[in-house]
Image 1 (tube, helix red, strand yellow):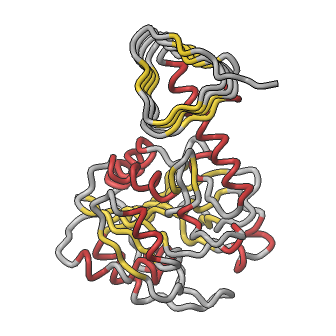
Image 2: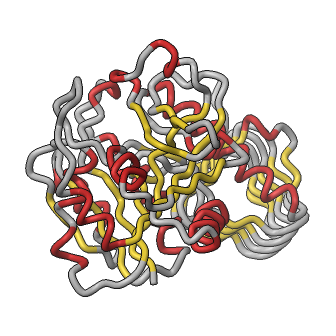
Length: 333
């Protein structure tokens, strides 16, 4: 059995925004919803979301989902965030997958692979790691002479030699549930931040001679954490590329792919042609052999097979019947 914990209580100070970090939009949806969709694709027994900063706003984003909401009243670190969920998993027997609400690009297959590896290795803890060219800002994976993980050191607590390590902690873990909550009670905030670090559990497991496994992600873009507006823009670019690639593999033509904006719930049929500077949003559904000319913005629109939407049209909640040629919007010069 699997339970998923999503940590979504932080402020996101570096975003310089009044919004909680997890509510910033990626492809038209809050970051947190992307993480939730990935979590539910794993068919877990439980999904718990830890909320804190401006919790009432985060709760609104959670309304469509069958999740338990746990309020972390004081943000005392990742270890404390997980500890407050203990009462909600009292009767649960299985593994606990911990995800960050600000890491929206993780693929379900990567997490399935992580869980499989955890079972295969018979590990107490399994960490998702990545080898990156610039590890700045991330916790470093410390391995012993035999190559086994023995600890994770946060950057603010790392020595110069440790900061040179390229293998980083992604903040994604699988724990055996009984170990997780027992070990959390042992950690102390003896660090620069004065916080309870979830990463301290690695050293505790190693000291108890329990197995700690680590699986490296093959695509480092998956583990991008959103800590700034720059990170958010980078994630948007990656996500848009993924969506366009998926549609092109299914027979959709983009005349100039980089100039088309898409949202995750959009559907496009094979043989459709999309011109530059088009936005397809919400529940928009283009059936087969549809043409959308430049400078169109469609939200919650169904364009039936063989229809064409002329340049410059802005449509909301409309149905364009089969074979209809919608004239270009009038342009006044």
